[in-house]
Length: 214
Image 1 (cartoon, rainbow, N blue to C red):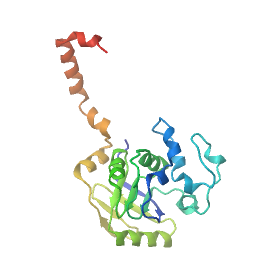
Image 2 (spheres, rainbow, N blue to C red):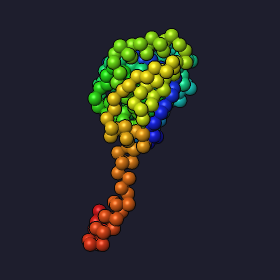
Image 3 (cartoon, rainbow, N blue to C red):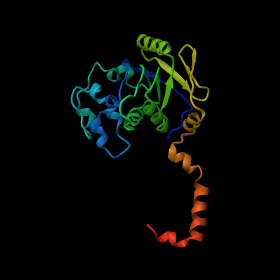
Image 4 (cartoon, helix red, strand yellow):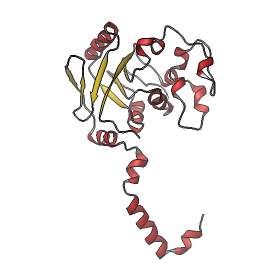
């Protein structure tokens, strides 16, 4: 998992409340058994005018020119702002996969659905909760200034606006530690790889027949 310490990026706004995971990545794309390739289908039913299916070439699709991510000013965005209760609905982990694989590193909203919020941290995304009035002001500033960028400093736990104003946010210390070091659940376990190998070697030395069991 990629480390997250400081990230600066263009901001894209999703100006809707209660955006559910089926809107983030529609159900037909859950057929894939891979953990990659979901970025082109992020917000698929909003991004395209035609129905999408797994394996389609995005270049053959009909993009919706009115959807925010299809507008030139937002195409390279890597920070997403949204309204309250973002990521509600089913608990599919494909939703943060699609967001991260599209190119977003940080999400900002007044609130997130609990399971989605937890899944973001496990997949290298930083979900940031800010007051609703603060987020509303960010929406106004993004609309007013093309190319609007925010700097997200996880080490200092602040979002820095273009003019230098800092917005503090809270994050649990353990989650902060994992993101800053690029540790997912497997990465956390592999920190102890030497101890695991030593334990397995000792165990087999005492019980050699275990090497031949299924």
